[in-house]
Image (tube, rainbow, N blue to C red; front, top):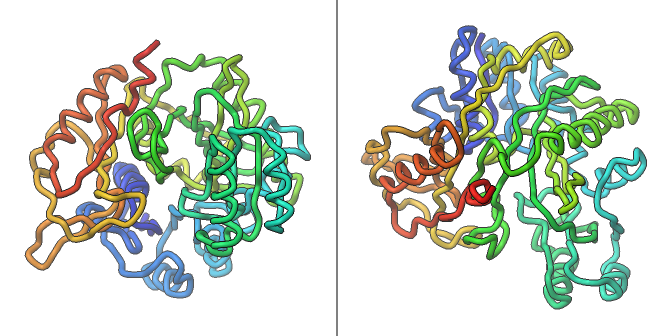
Length: 422
């Protein structure tokens, strides 16, 4: 089967890598892809928002399955565009992708169906939002309603921070139209956890749990990023809590989407907070594979990813079993100096050929005219160590990441450290 993967980051590299292992996989294309993905797939210079060009390419190549990676095209209706041309596509339609595209929709859905989440209020007017905000206690969370490349959420520990975040979102429009509405919600303390699930209507097949590290610096300091590293499994979180989150949050949400006429098909990603008393609550939902969660989840998948995706597309997900490895995986992200603010591109990357015992997923790389690897994004590479437990996988990831150098390289030194405290 010939496959087209839409996207060009570390998540898409991991998806292409996993699909390529399927005995049923034929030619794999990736649009637009990146230099690293180009080593295992044929990259096509079509942007993720060029729906007409993507559907025309898929028809021309007789593509058997299209897999959508990023959030923006899903929210804008790329799945509907492929379905209109009768091209099999894995991902939620526009009306279902709203669970990620609008935080107010997501919060209202959870409230309506009594699914655990933080208390909140929503606003489309700056003055009203500010009046509400100043009457609250800190810490407090301010969220732009729409997509903001993973950076539209501020956890404010002072009222000054909170007011600035609100002003930046609603008045300065730092996230554009994504900030036309805001959600102000209570701060939840505890352990964060991500659970991704393959979903087909009310059928939910959860993946193994993972934990992301959002802040750019050690000890969860500094601004939010798209993610500086991940690990799976979570030995410090009781398996009963993970099971409870699936039963109380993910399955009811899939059912609620069906009830709302927005049946979800694809990957539903729950960002959860486990309170000190062990109660899971919903922070957010995403409508696709997470980045960089995918880079630790898919290496633990023993079953055939292509078969799973086809089952979801064909409505037979309930009929298949999915197996997971007991191995641990730790991903350390190597980022450009200055990220998540401005950063240079085109800096030479050295040492990739010295990595022997880890997976390397390319997020922001290119090749220059001389054929040398160079940086081409904020998050440049994800180095994934696999081992019998978190300690072994973590040691391997850091040991192999040390081989790779580029000017200004930054990484966190404490990825997965929380899991070793148990």
